[in-house]
Image 1 (cartoon, rainbow, N blue to C red):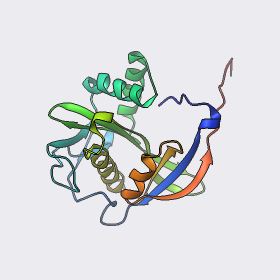
Image 2: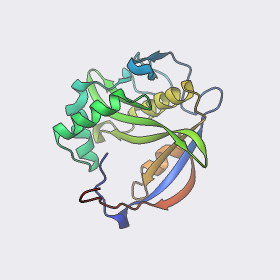
Image 3: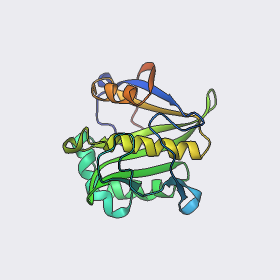
Image 4: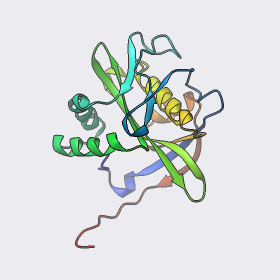
Length: 201
């Protein structure tokens, strides 16, 4: 998602979760289905009653029809976007074999969404990273965030990845309670720098 904070506000804490042979800390065994282009995502069946998830909670692959709800959730977190911009990004990411886009819903209402990405680093190898996790303020502590992270871990484990990372702004105090409760550990704190690339290449 497009970042709106000033550089001085962009300190972030990096937390990491090891995906062991029996899955990540939040994950129970579950079917994985293959999507177009060879991607895998969690089977969209219900996760009711698992790991303390709220009754009737489902996690499934994001669809075009979910974009209005995703747009509203992004704005709620402070990352507003135009509908056309979001649709363009969705079209690219939905085709990417290295990304999975998931939503949590209950009774047909989208409560949150997540993007998880496969990443390769020359110095540390291959792993997964949660690059977006947003849950509606009306659905906090409903189990939506926990369910989304569990499905992301299953996606990563099914692809042979043994590590999940997430970067969270140091100002998001609630996030720094949420991730450790799922088994993540803080590995470093860093500053994020950004440079606008203008003019011709």
